[in-house]
Length: 301
Image (cartoon, rainbow, N blue to C red; front, side):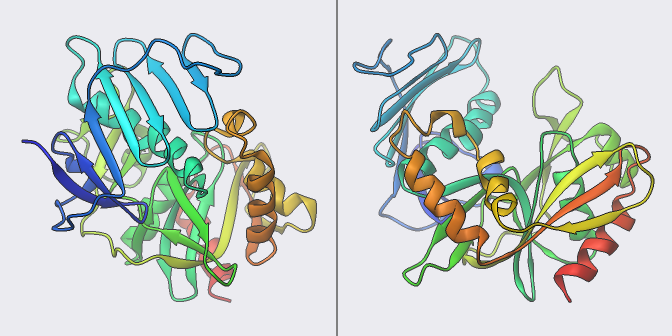
């Protein structure tokens, strides 16, 4: 099946294969992003800090995952994938919807925050933090409470014409580690692994995502500690925009993309308009329901 069209991150994507993670195909004809299968160059001329797995210029990024594929992301409009022999489409899509999508968003001037998020009566609420800190587990907990999913893993944040931060919905799938699934009483027998070697599973959302962007209300930075109890710490001044500097996808490529200064200004503008909290929680046991209680009371206040 070819030329399937999907909606994600506020953009229309024309795909060379079916992409079930992105939900049902759309009827939109003009594509913002065209994804194709084909040959990519071995090097990018004038690439700065060219390495074996990533080369970056202001207009294009070439990167590869051994055993999977090489990807060329260029001009914020095109992604070319050169699969390695035998690479399953599931792996091609994994890096397309993560690394490649984040780089393309940078090229379009959209900030890709490493976060999951939900729709609330007060606006978009995002959960960020390093890998394994509980972002997707918290998302799944709020979905159980009836909140609508907004995004998982990559949160696409842009500023509208009035400088207001908006979050575009991603696609109706999220990822859960096996221990988190067990904690939330979710069976994994019929779920696909994100990677064969990982105890991490792709979980389809129960309903399709609302396509409309949502004003960003709050960001919660998850921080496991060895201390007992849960607490929130409001972040102020430089600590606010440092959250965006620390948790942006592919932040090491920003200087080579000539996007570093723009990203800094964008981060400051976003941070100055939203509620930002650091969330301290015990490393063990992970208490997602109590954590959700604490955060929900805060963003609804």
